[in-house]
Amino acid sequence: MDIQRVKELLTPALERADEVSWEWLLEGIANGDIQLWMGKESALTTRIIYGLHTELQWLMVGGKLNEVLEMVPDIENWAKSMGCSKARFIGRKGWAKVLTNLNYKIKPQVSMTKEL
Image (tube, rainbow, N blue to C red; front, side, top):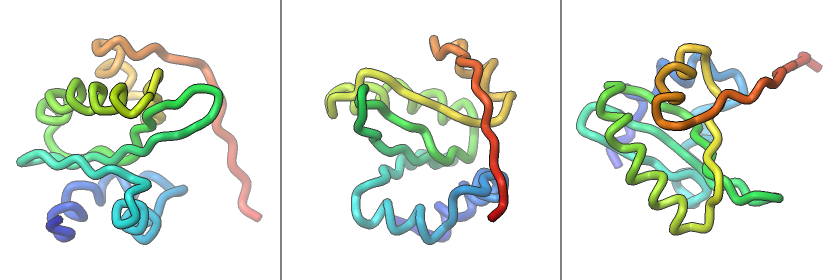
């Protein structure tokens, strides 16, 4: 894993995500809790969440959108092979248009935070 390349591709996404740190992300990749998917000009991370439904959760995405979209079917097939019955993506509004083209449905929800 070329950590410098990963950081270069994912830094823009990580800077917008106040609930994720490099340390947490890299530790998760190292211990296998988080999957790192690399393209030639893109990187993205996922993890599997176990609960009522086993689901794939998209975490950080960076790089060339077209390449990322080409990677989605293989990642989803891998997730199915791991027992996932759903995939969840939480992100900026701009992702809605892109992902509805891949049959993701928008579920209204509210995200609220408070500094303690």
